[in-house]
Length: 411
Ligand code: PMT
Image (cartoon, rainbow, N blue to C red):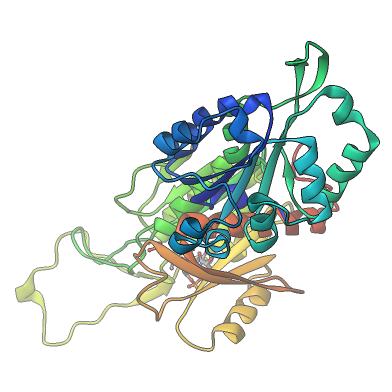
């Protein structure tokens, strides 16, 4: 699975260990807070030789923690509590000594103890003399940390405080922050077609049949896919949402118009995601003039005819993209979804329970169960944007599996 870990942490613990680069850490705190993150600082004894706790307290707006056995600190927020509070840990600079302690799982100071006591993902920016960096012991410790899913940022190449030149400088604070929050681009260069919103099926020039879709799910998917590097064409029914940056948007009204637009765009698409709530029926003989109330009897009948099933028709094409459907269900969710997966011959179906008021139609949150012919995935309730990132992650994985690609980029 791709890692979107750095996108979510909002509560960051910044560990600072002994190294000349520690003097740059107030800037690091400033850049993290500029990203909207809360930051608490843990300063090792070595670190405090290079940066004053007071500077860090001023920029983070919180006391700086240093001692493992500090009664004041334990009374305010104990070390276990601090380890639970953080949802992301960054150690910069990380000295050779503390790197070894981390690799060995030691708990001989506050920072290493917190690293053992937390479930939060950890990023480290090592900084040391270039000989020390290349030493087999250091490299072995780095391999241990990587195997434990600890993310290594840098080090950078350049002139060092000791006047030697080589690998071992801490990355600049801007580079650390941009690497932390850089989105992976697993969909770079891929073409994705997405439908969104409802369709309107005219009864007369002023009345129509429709549904409660707001377009939010499809628009969030378009925004997330663009962020992951894809070229996105979004075909939208009538909604009032702004077009996400970088997305090519085509507006349609009825299901037949959506069908025509999809068929015109689908040729070179790698993935088709059908998030629109397409009306299954249209009014067979829509009136060309507004139907007058006085022309109506007590009962008034509309004859409905079936609209084309856009998703099924795309999936039936000889040269077809990877097809992802949505299913809006209110009961027998699993059975209905699996039936749609087979009937429409699609690669994945993402099901939302639209009987719930907190997810699905016309709200900002969603939760999905995604079925492939072989597997089931659960995407827990989150914003439609973050649900989209997770769904695109599953789609990337499944596309690679289906076509035996190592990655979706440049294949
Ligand atoms: O727009 P929002 O307010 O954010 O709400 C999001 C949503 C609930 C509309 C969305 O997440 C969703 O579930 N969309 C699909 C709704 C739907 O039409 O489900 P369905 O079970 O009727 O259709 C199954 C699939 O076939 C869907 O991918 C649909 O786009 C497609 N379809 C259906 C009918 C048709 N004539 N052509 C189609 O392509």
